[in-house]
Length: 112
Image (cartoon, rainbow, N blue to C red; front, side):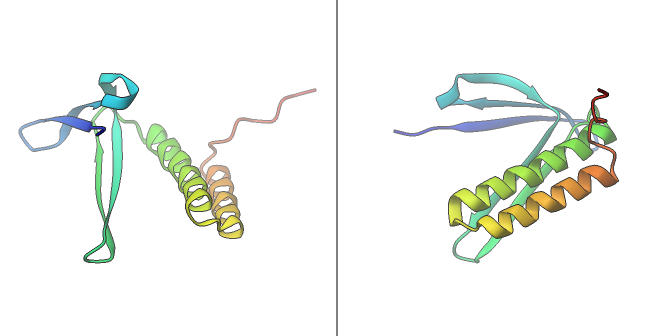
């Protein structure tokens, strides 16, 4: 059994992404639009991470800040699930909280 994930990136004349769409065969995702992609791949031979970071012209600065914030939190979850490193994952979440506070990403507290 295989599962395919495909990213299609439409570029402008300067090779800047204008549109990103993706498919995932095991989740019935077909031609779904996205404004940004961060893909990390571990190269076991070189023992390092390779990455592809793409975002469209439509991605706003505020959306990018939120995207980075949510990615940090997801990385903390992955670290904990994959390695059992609960303390370091919580440290990463603490940094995510700090990041969100500094960039004003948090909703204001509800008024009683």
